[in-house]
Amino acid sequence: MTRIYDCTSDSDTSQPDTSQSSYQEHIALARTAIGSGALVVIPTDTVYGVAADAFNAEAVQLLLDAKGRSRQSPPPVLIPGIPTLDALAVDVPQPVRDLVAAFWPGGLTVIVNAQPSLVWDLGETRGTVALRMPSNQIALDLLAVTGPLAVSSANLSGMPAALDAQSAEAALGESVEIYLDGGKSGETYASVFGQTGDGSSTIVDATGFEANGGLLHIVRAGVITRDAIAAVIGDVLAAAPAVNTDAAPTLVAPGPDERDTDR
Image (cartoon, helix red, strand yellow):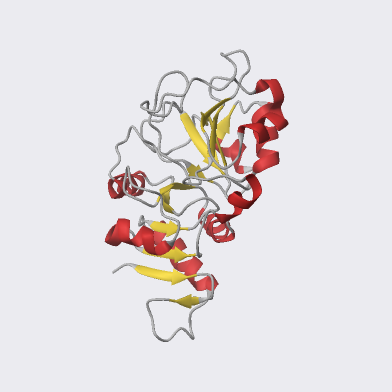
């Protein structure tokens, strides 16, 4: 039986008597579920995500199966802090570090080359990994006790992203063991950047930096605007390509890769 835990008011929505419930207990339950290889839905600052232990290949496969995605759509990885970037990635160019300093925690995902020594299996990543440090406190508190989590938007593939725990539960149901309810997600960026749409993170690809003349590419527009990114890294940001609405996102250079839509 799935359970929704209200992390906004320290109450467990599945139990009439909430006197013994607490925020810390909810985080501990989610940590235990992650440790056992189960899936947990969490709020982020953009949309709700379904999370699995990034170093548990079976749990990552459960995540992909729950969403109806293939291994050709590897999930991004949420991390608890900026220092984890160097633990999971190699050859991180300075412009990426500048962007991370400006926009983490927050709605920026960076695709970088993964540490070759990592023992994990996120799918067909071609040696890369998409990383983000979210700004939602519930997500950060869980990440602090679990370490990196593979996190995909909490919806079935091709359907709208969930902005609350109830929508996520309606989409994913019993495939998820625990739902952490943090209220509605995605409201921060509308006021800051005037963004509309699904509120996804902006994805910047740095994997071809050394080979393409030292440029970073925005491969999915999101809550962090192109202008905001250009203000940090200037001419290092590649020009926007011509829009082709029928094409899948190109998220790993070179060549197309329908990588998962991130939180």
